[in-house]
Length: 66
Image (tube, rainbow, N blue to C red; front, side, top):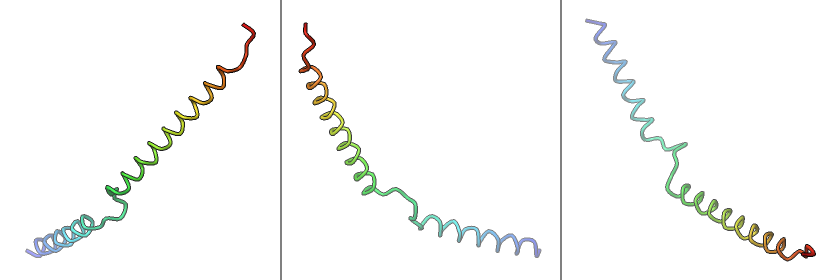
């Protein structure tokens, strides 16, 4: 029955590693990171829309002689 003891020890070590991985939060995305990213993307989109509108207004103001 030494095979079962080796297997039991291996499974206990494997379970301990799984528990350690589940409690380790390195690399996980937190709500704070998601909110910051969403805010920055929204600000970039708003800036792009403002610039696009101003460029279009300036282009429409160019006299074409018609």
